[in-house]
Amino acid sequence: MATSKTIRRLEVVSPVPADIDIANSTSALHISDIADELGLSSDHYDLYGKHKAKVLLSVLDQFEESPDGYYVVVGGITPTPLGEGKSTTTVGLCQALGAFLDKKVVTCLRQPSQGPTFGIKGGAAGGGYSQVIPMDEFNLHLTGDIHAITAANNLLAAAIDTRIFHEASQSDKALFNRLCPANKEGKRSFADVMFRRLKKLGISKTDPDELTPEEIKRFARLDIDPDSITWRRVMDVNDRFLRKITIGQGPEEKGMTRETAFDISVASEIMAVLALTTSLADMRERLGRMVIGNSRAGEPITADDLGIGGALTVLMKDAINPTLMQTLEGTPVLVHAGPFANIAHGNSSIVADKIALKLVGKGGFVVTEAGFGADIGTEKFMNIKCRYSGLTPQCAIIVATIRALKMHGGGPEVVAGKPLDYAYLSENVGLVEAGCVNLVRHISNTRAYGVNVVVAINKFASDSEAEMNVVRNAALAAGAFDAVVCTHHAHGGKGAVDLGIAVQRACENQTQSLNFLYPLDFSIKEKIEAIAKSYGARGVEYSEQAEKQIEMYTNQGFSNLPICMAKTQYSFSHVPSQKGAPEGFVLPIRDVRASIGAGFIYPLVGTMSTMPGLPTRPCFFEIDIDIATGKVLGLS
Image 1: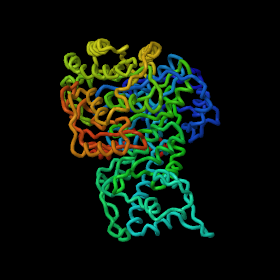
Image 2: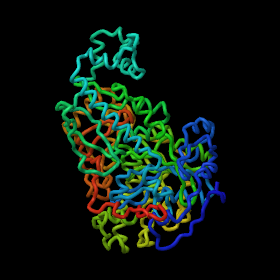
Image 3: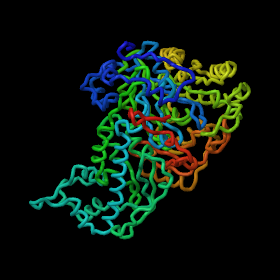
Image 4: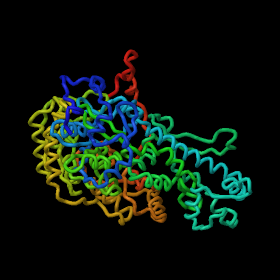
């Protein structure tokens, strides 16, 4: 794959310029060149300008008989608020594999939300000389997938409140007559989607005029309990003032007000569905079975009960196709989905990974990124994503930094936007040694899945050789297959060549099968407790509300779903300030909710905000446009 047609050699400078300046200094290849190198014909993708293309799912049929390549997942230790460079490592590794080690490789990344991009975190295209380009397009609208999710989510929200409104003011007969109006000949018929509700109710009749009054009532009246509604409206902006709102205050709504809220778009269950779906047909089924609340009788109400599953799928029909892009060094990238990593599973899509594995073929590499630390991201990757995909990784990378390990060893608090304490900028082997307990637990937990673990030590200029040796020795003693120092931020793929070699060896020497943390036939509580034990907890404490929800989901037949723990990313425990590897704590479960369409139950550990707020000085202060060239400035 490493041909002059696509592979670029970077001319790196020191100190490393701003990410957007590096991105703007590199001319991206036409995306058709990247597609050609992957073996894609023009029938396999739709162009979105010069530098992006939507890869069609028909590729999976075309390459069905092709062998899969090696599958690698990138997780990390428990991070500081500054992040430890998982995306940068993912991109840098792929640049090393493709541009220096002559391997066929595809990077699979999540699409970033505009909330963090304009808020405090910045973008997610990698950094330094290990980036996806065009960086501005990657971090902003891309190909509109998040906008499609926003539209679909809010259409469903409108349908819910509208249905409650109409049911409140109409008799059963009037409601039925409007749902199934007679044509000019006086004949009624069901819309195709209505047969899904009829089947759920056990009604086999196909002629609306044959329904009894009791059947008419059961079919037409959803009787949604407003207090049970879990579906919220969304937008892809950090707006703290939408965390609680009142709707229905217009005079025509006749006083039918209720309190609700907005979430950020990537927290929508529709995003989680997109990430976990395996085909267009599968997405249609998942969207249709999303539960928005209960009837007053306690029955779950789905999107298909509202008759909207097909319309949601139509809005999502293009979003299901991954977006093809490229790295700074000309290796291919598939960008797809971006589920909220606390509430949902925080991984890119199954379909992107499956397409990539076929395109790289035997001996090639697909590197995908998990969200947050390995206790959240890699755990959910294994127990949720791999269950639904049927794919097995051969190698798991754990990204570590001296900075984060010093924090876990008792170093001063790290605060985004504030200068680092001197302890992080000078040698302190003792802090690093103490902090390695965090790395060791992540290695132990990840090895339990039966995959080889490679530790990637992201080197900063202030890190000493003695500090890095401490990390390497601790990693190997804990059972890591290898531990490698990386400088891909400063040097691009060249700085991750050793990591690429270690990953290749780890994949070639993988012999175990994938072990899940729990079987699906465990009860909801048993599954929660298995995950809590992996954190270091000695037990779990459930609130009265959590107990009530667990009982309800069990009675509704949802107890066989995997668990997606909603927990802080800043500690193994539920307390962000507890660093290192805390043990013996009791994990409190405040509430338990469900994403039935996506296919998981999510317990809430403490308070999880699904609508971030803007800081005093958001990233948007730096973002502007060069009016002479049209280039975006200030993105990070």
